[in-house]
Image (cartoon, rainbow over all chains, first blue to last red; front, top):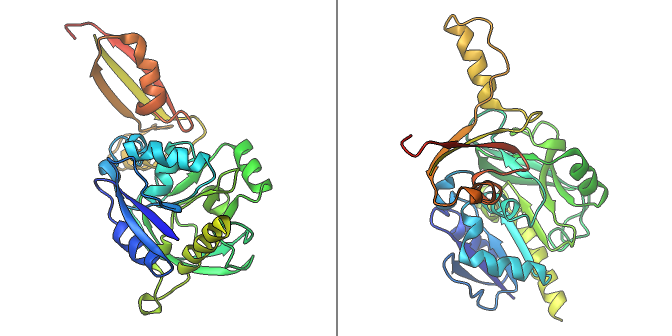
Length: 224
Length: 77
């Protein structure tokens, strides 16, 4: 099973995502200017500041050549995970609903957050239990999830809010404490916290590995 | 043709930058300030002004969370 990890100018977490993915499978970096996904079974759009976050976070990366391939891959049911800036890119590309606005505290904030698993019956969370808490770091200035009320109703009723900030951990002011949201088809997921930074007890938590392991199992299940 | 695009947070969306400015002004002695909204200004020269709206929809603004307003300026500007 092979992960393909995108790399934009200004990405900064693609190496950690690569290392995390390699703990559960094979993984390659995919340069933003290329359209070939090199046989990847799942795509990760990593964190960072693609294209300097000019204009809006993710707004320019969304039009990278590689994103055409990712959009086609997602349309065909391929598994796509967006982390932090990757989540912003996927929202800008309209692969995910809503948008990420500036944190309510107006600051770039870095802290370990507790996330509650809301739906464990998805390709991204199947090694988790519903209601389980994950300890994962978050670090961003533009992480306040926003969607229109009607959209919020839709995604909540559809079980598409996979992760919520636990009480007291929603530092950015996200609507309904939403930390991560999935598309309607159930194959594209984005979250602001960084599971790739939580893969080894040495650095405080290995809870993030569960998402990578879930994706591996799902991708292999699809192929089997 | 020169054009100016004004982009601002949609009504109803909390604008933390606006709130910060609104709180800072009275501290400087400016009283009676309310409803401050901080947006973005894009100035550009275009051959075909009819494309401006599409530019806004696709790239310059995010219509989910921002309103935009296009102003055409004189060539001499």
